[in-house]
Length: 450
Image 1 (cartoon, rainbow, N blue to C red):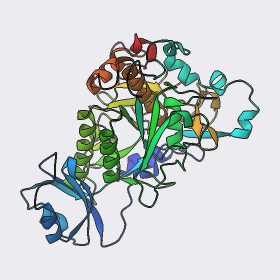
Image 2 (cartoon, one colour):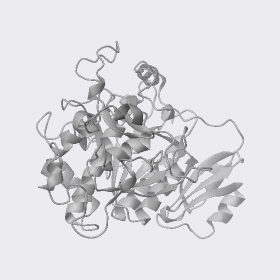
Image 3 (cartoon, rainbow, N blue to C red):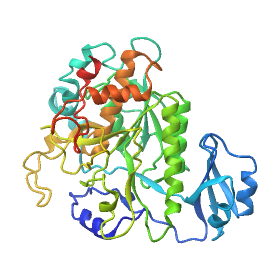
């Protein structure tokens, strides 16, 4: 939703070249048309009540998508009184305007083509992937049972990437690509046309010139974003629910935005319906045994204070999605520092993982002192790419969850147990114990597997 003006204007000053800290989705545009889309959340969290379609039709609504296992629907309507009429029903818990979510824009990025990489004789991992080495202790975790993501017994361990898709033809990924599904209207192919999802997948399970944290894990593409643009929360919820039903082991969501609970364009209850439906989807996946991982955001702000985020405006602003049952990840640099763009906040960060930055001499205000060797290298369509962001940190945690599951066996650990192992095995790097920047600390695969 729209954020308070002072915060938005201040954050825009942090532009870095062609990339910005803000995903374009930080502001959600609303079409100036008579027909709008809404989310209706019913009181029953596990199914749609009988008679719900008649209720919606009577109010002038048309069901666009049924999220029956969440007790929610996406509805379109041109009736300006649609919400007030629907809310009169005792079946309805919340109803409001549907939000949009965007893939988290990297703080900075650069690319390397196949042709350019051919001139580099040694493996790209050996020369450039400090981030993978940091988490795996220079590959030591790969010598431990389950450490590569190869299960000690049973089925493959699958990490679902809810993102822009995956380039399943990439030489570093095609061996570990499990399958893909698209939730993008008009796009049936789950293949990545953006680069974001392929980079995320490479950090998890690349096996070639670059390596992921778990080079024998499998990745599945749950594409929710087209080449450009946004996704509705209903589509993301559907993807998350489908991944859970497909019995994936881990979900990575390097996406998100912010919900302002006093947006002048909406009543607070309009926002609440969308947020509650999203939280139901996350909880559905966790109850089905899926470990859910999400990025903290690239706005360099303390997200623990909803009031402060709203600045001079009234109301509360929350990072979304930010369900506390997820594993929420901040981004660190090569020097085990908090990356200059990473969000932080007490109670909002569980762990930190390497997301990359531009080195110790970089000045975000003057844009001087940039060193690309401190970025994170991973797969992108047509080659490899350097990126930095909490989007690059979260998949390392998702991969760590995958190798932990590989060591113990598929469906043997509950998501809360996986999360506990990750938190308890993290390296304490800032203040003793929990802190606002790294949460429980910097992830460490060797500690987790031992």
